[in-house]
Length: 142
Image 1: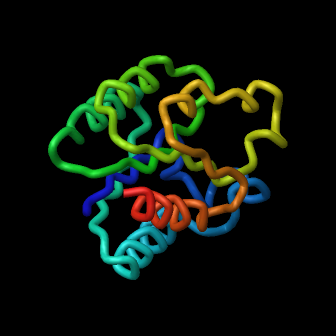
Image 2 (image 1 turned 90 degrees about the vertical axis):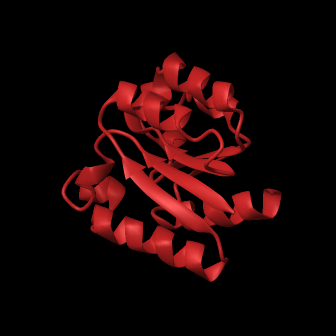
């Protein structure tokens, strides 16, 4: 079983950006948490990140025939990217959306996720551990 973990804009800035919201841990720590969880539950993961909407869409398109599921944190694209939503629908893989912060307790514009409707579930507000939970949930779902 193989999953893609895809991170959108500014996730690479963890540990630097808004530490009160996103915590002290950096992106490398996030990748380590993901890889350790994958090893623990015996799944393969590829962790990718891009700040570009088009690159994220290309990565999603490239999942066909290579992955069994997707964990995605679209970053700010969550709130307005119909293109990412359409790409997730096009590949039709079980997908779980993850957000480090609780988007429903933040600014009003962050409350709406257009990409969540293309996912089987959403995990918000549980920090970096939300990714580990998403990987576990995907494996159980499959």
